[in-house]
Length: 62
Image 1 (spheres, rainbow, N blue to C red):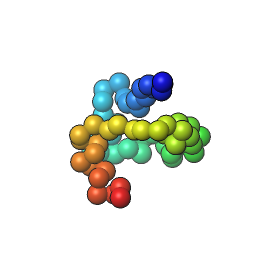
Image 2: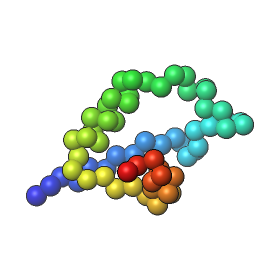
Image 3: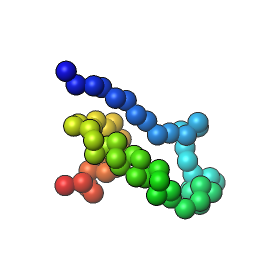
């Protein structure tokens, strides 16, 4: 039997950009946080994405 692990990364208001779609307020991307998410995704056997994310990213993914 497999484990089902649910993970989500979101903001309190569901939107990360400031006025004018500026995302500079968050500072430079964190290598530590990126590595943490990447390690968890690579360890999984299957990832499920919602329709909106898939529509946005499908042109970038083979």
